[in-house]
Image 1 (cartoon, chains in turn yellow, orange):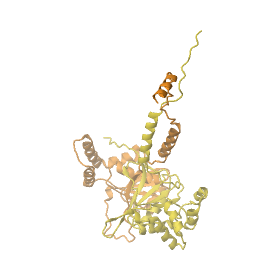
Image 2 (cartoon, chains in turn blue, red):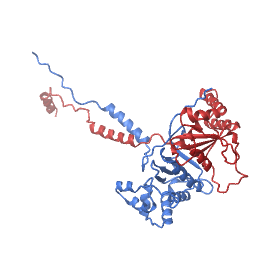
Image 3 (cartoon, chains in turn yellow, cyan):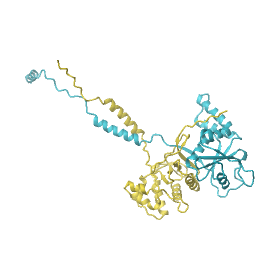
Image 4 (tube, chains in turn orange, green):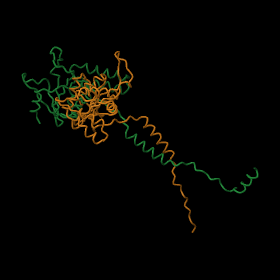
Length: 219
Length: 211
């Protein structure tokens, strides 16, 4: 019997098309990406048919979680306007630093420049002001998460009111975005809205998920 | 020189020069790319979040009866939101000094609940707005989005018999409920609605409401 010589196939596959595709995808993702902001707690927003896009600059965000904890956030930079209503370049304004300084002054807590720099880089937060310093300087993610107890909103110690007030003072043009969990109580949301209205904010952006709805009139 | 070359040629005449393969091992590159793609795909926030805009009536600590807006009671529907996803509505004004008290009706968030009710009350406006929208979609009318929005607003305002909806929620209501009900207003093209505080009379009504 003649030996049948099986042709030895090279185990190499031509990966060029695959690499081509991958590079394309990679480039696409790298260019289109806007990083998802860090979330202090998962929030499941309710649905609506609204198709208006959320503003991404110049905003004050108040998050309300399922268990009615309140978080606050203000973005670093935004548009500032001079007296004549003309836009001034973004980069000069560091709202977060100014905000922290004002809060510290009000509650008699001194924040060093280093604290402020760190705070500038962080995102949304929710803790009583006296544990703020610890949160800023903590490196342990577990400890950081444990400190996020929510900003006190009772009328006895209404810290959210102070945050909102100083945020409005540092950036009067900021829009207010409320990101609430569908299951949070209306009571808490109402409190936040009241605080805002006390600070002369009457327009709110409620973050929602897009969902189509049909309406038909039956005759 | 020529000789040497000749010699070499003679010796290695049949020996093929070793062919270098043009293939490069791309596996590490592919690995890395896979990793990066996965990273970007997971961290990307593709769709920007959508927002629903609401404007609350300005707070006035000392309301002046002269400047307060009067609403016609016969076209004012009060929608009361409470816990367990329940909605009640009543027509007109609930004032214990002016009996009879309006009747409280129960409904829900489904398609046949509050939406049906709103559509019926808001029939005329809804029809005209939808007619305009379909015309634009079919291409019979060409206009910019801003013009369309303005026209819709005009249509909404034109009807003086359209309902005025007052949305009131008690402490048991969830945030989702309020968003849902404002959304229903948008779906049903209700022109005038406002989120207002619930009063004690209405809280009492809710307590005695049919289950």
